[in-house]
Amino acid sequence: MNKLKALFVISLLKLLSRLSIKNAQAFGAFIGRLLWLGDSKLTRVTKKNIEICFPELSGEQQQALIKASLQETGKVFTELGAVWEWPTDKTLALIHHVEGKQYFDEAFARERGVIVLAPHHGNWELVGLYLSTLRPMAALYKPPKIPELEAYMSMVRGRHGSQLVPTDKRGVIRLFSILREQGMVGILPDQVPGGSGGVFAPFFGVPANTMKLVSRLVQKTGCEVVSLCAIRRPNGGGFDMVFRKADPEIYSDDVEVSVAALNRSVEACIRDNPEQYQWEYKRFKGARKDGLWLYKDINE
Image 1 (cartoon, one colour):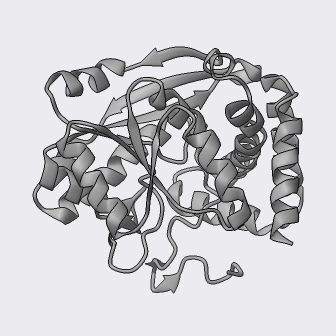
Image 2: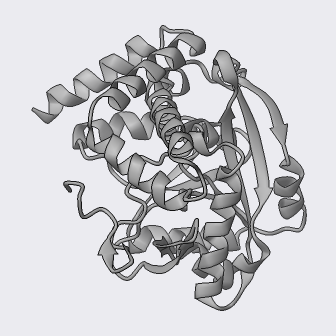
């Protein structure tokens, strides 16, 4: 059954690759509107996240943001045909402007390793492709839920020589080594860590289980941290790459201070285009507010 699922997904991505980016995004927005009209789990998670992160918005404004977020997340999937299947030059031609790249270049000029934070904002798969064409890169890699997709995903993500480092002890040790050698590591900083890998720190004012890994890597290797997002332009107009410096307290020796700064760094990426963040993810899993589990009314 998994082989059939994998074949279906790969075939669908190849079909999506035949679309222009404008038509692919229109299809993704259509999927998002269908989710909006139905009472899907994704819709309910999005609603909960936006309600707790943007209490200053009116009910009408929150609803508009929920709908827009579902449409933007639909585009992330339908854009995969272009990002994974198009020739690299054709895909990179979708990038129309790069902002803040001096922060990235200056860190390497100081002969430091660099962590690039790539939150689930805009099109993070395009971020990975773009970075891999700048310098050799290592990225933490979590196997897909359908094992038969692993070979395909490893091939498309690593086609420019990126190292895909497993999310285990050996993989983490490899990241320390790469950064000490003044290399580049890409990390998705807004995933809920397992076990003892995280501490609770504010994210949009709400406690969220947040990874300690970035803070540990910074403390042990003296590397620098920047963030990068591929922000979608309107009407199928491609993407803008936006680099930012991380919040300076990310370099604190106090892990809790550093982790809080990590979340602020992610927030800074999101606030200009909040609809392009993946609010469909249970970012506050395991967290409470006013004594209640945040997702208690949403089926796991």
